[in-house]
Image 1: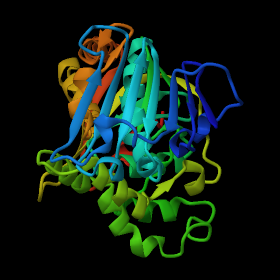
Image 2: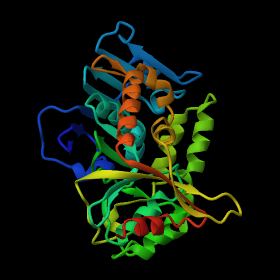
Image 3: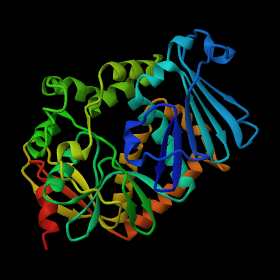
Image 4: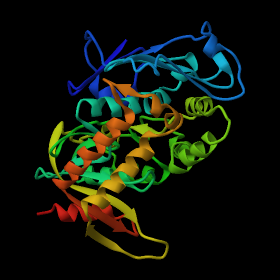
Length: 371
């Protein structure tokens, strides 16, 4: 078994190694908020048979009980992707079949992380889709952007200049404006790869597959905004979406690297107090612009929620969300609480749009915090 303790807020016990949570690896402990196990559903009559469509089944949910189960199966029955989520108040057990277990990335990103979002909310924390760093003089800030904008590239360039790294993708937030690190491995897209190689202090080429550079475009496409958009479109049709996603990502591994793989002397900071949030925005075609613009709390809230929903609500969670209930609170109750907490957070910090036609956001950030 693998054990993960996320800042003593949430504890996870897993039968498979969850690479994204490696930073939080822990000694064995009693009790967990999430337990992840591999199981066979061949004896379950709801799950085992072939069918004409995806199927989501709930047991005991309608009664309003805190003890209930969500079952998910697809066209191929036991030969396809299947899982169950068992809720018991604020304790959750996730059971996955062998097929899903072959893609640890899908297991974490498409099953565990969305659950983490709601568990953190039930404990009055926000799991925000954002990068987080701290300048050398101690000023903490967030970066938020839609997928494939250039957030990871910006993070790498700032860390190379001595900035402290807390996260590239998700940040844990406690009001009024405190951030805790969530240093997952980063997905290096094709346009980020050159920056990563240039920034590295030790062998990203030497220590990894020599064909990485050649295959990066193919690998990054699967895990890019284009790839996600395609999967969202497929999910609108009667296809075994989770099975396709699992098989695809088990065959074509995501291009994942820890910040220390890229920058050997990268400094990870456990916690920081934040005072700024920057939304990265590219200039329009033919537009030459480099500007920093202060925006309202309302504008920032809308952008932050849109970016978070894009990260979390990947199929099949768009179907599952209505059946999530933790400690008597539905997912919609928790999302409303998230919105209110986000509004308070953004009221306590300065929010900006960084608009650059040349993806020069790191230069703009370095200049702002130079004094």
